[in-house]
Image (cartoon, rainbow, N blue to C red; front, side, top):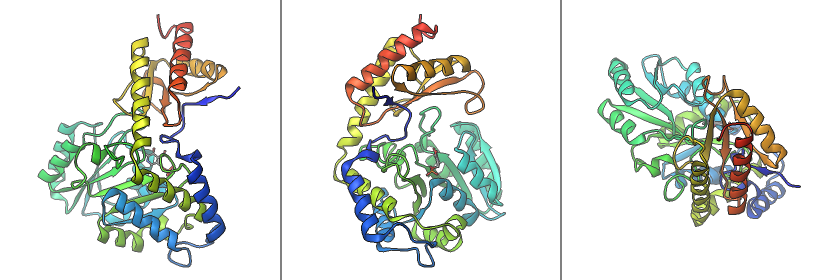
Length: 355
Ligand code: PLP
């Protein structure tokens, strides 16, 4: 019998969409398996330029630059942009790739408490002595499914003359009325300066990442960003997938809306069954269990019953906050969602997570 996957970042189900697969095959046949080169030598084809333009258009930004992954985009941006005279202010729960990217740069580093605007303001005040300030945050945090308070962050950034950077890996394609991301959802598209995101999750799920923002910044990254300069160009099939995924999203928001409705269905049914689900309105639905062993045995038992989910415990999440992270996709049917809730309820009762 088939197993239902509830732990992929395939939020919109586009990695198995027939048009996305066909676009990859066509790009492979027309443009070859790969470029055997970095972008600036002989690794740029028309499809790379077209995809960069499409990404910028999708996010309503001036320009975009592709990377082999969003990990690379995050590794490459801070060092290229910031000098020892500058400051970067980072949410303590930012993704590992942001943390590593910041480690590589020589700017002054401030770490503010998770989504704590008072702490951010205090750190911004302290950072006034530096030449330039950059606030860096995940748009949506992948462990808790919570969304950064971007309106407040942008207000503080304006007050203290800072730039705002967001990592939209868990938002691009589905958050906001047209799936543009957290900045669209919270009405601050014109206030966020830099967006990094991935092509390896909602946008077809193959691989690749990018930075989009003001043209002078993208020009600077093309000159200075090490993962861009010194790593191979994205393979045509991967470019084809992402390009088609963006076309589908720009034609209609029906897929994103279907995923949002299923997320709502899962969250409300699980809450009614007695579970605590962290975050709000996000397809990352962490089922909070507390105990690490309970999360592990429940996940194993769920798999035995045909539901593929993973338990997360320390050090991936704080001690005592173990959970099973469920991720909803547009390709789940209502019946799949209901079945998942039934299995959770059965397994939860068996292991004492529910009365
Ligand atoms: N940023 C966040 C918030 C992520 O969740 C991930 C992937 O797990 C990345 C960056 C890295 O993305 P990629 O897989 O494209 O390297």
